[in-house]
Image (cartoon, rainbow, N blue to C red):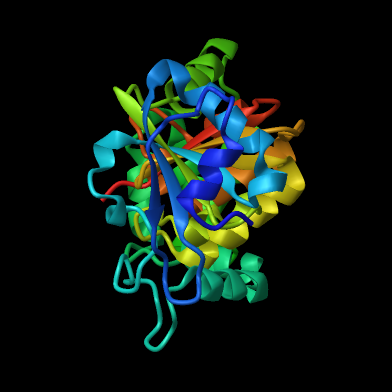
Amino acid sequence: MIVGSEDLRQVLTGTALEGKPVWDVPMCDGEPPALELRGIAVDEAKASLEIGRRFVNETGRWPVLSADFMGPTEQQWRFPGEFTSYVKEGEEVTPAAITARALALDLDKALAERSNRHRADLNDLAAWTARDPARRLAADQLRSAAGAGEVTTFGDGERWLLDWEVTHTRPTNDEIQQIRQGSLDYWHRELSFRLLLLPTAEPWRTTSYLDLFGSGGEFATALLKRWYERWGAVAVTHHGTMMNFEVVDPPTGIADAVELAWEHYQLASDTIRKPQLKLSSYAQALIGHPRWSLMQLP
């Protein structure tokens, strides 16, 4: 791995990034510094990303774009004390520690626990569902399932509704295209970007170094590893509350798409919490689509 900004400047000689300002970003103790190239115009962003990827074997660093609106660099990078509401007392918040916990995490168990973190109960969920005339039958059947003990928690109820909608409804092709254009393909329209070069060649470790607004370091990193290995998904941008991904091998069937949509919802629920957007329709839009945009707001 190249360590400092001067080494990076030599690597980039003769490329479109030659002469761009390069900054060292100190990490936690024992971690190599991250590197940033600043002043990248919008029309240079994707080409800059490709240059960063071209040299990953030489630099040992995965490139991610970030919009300049973030302000001070430290607002994004992982430092002790930053976004630690999900960290247990005594746990380290270093990238190395987060990665180690991600590798040891029982991800399916963590997904189940995360889905049941809501304070609301099944009666609330059924009442909210019944407000939509098209889903009143689902609300009635959810109440019946709860009464029979088949569904016992809020998270189980949300998943029950997702499966019910996939079975009983289907969005039109126009609706799927609207979801793709309005959600999955969303791209920040900024005046300029930074190219962040993480001190790792592993794309799935992005959230070990950059926080997705406190969504859980090891949980996010474990999910990114699953998505990288299963779907070929890699981070393209990171804006603090939003991440964009490119996907080499997206799901081709509804069963896999439903599981993926559920994982997106558990990590970044604001991706789906939009007017008229149902999780089942979002799952349909994921099928065969090579881009994702995940959002988690304050």
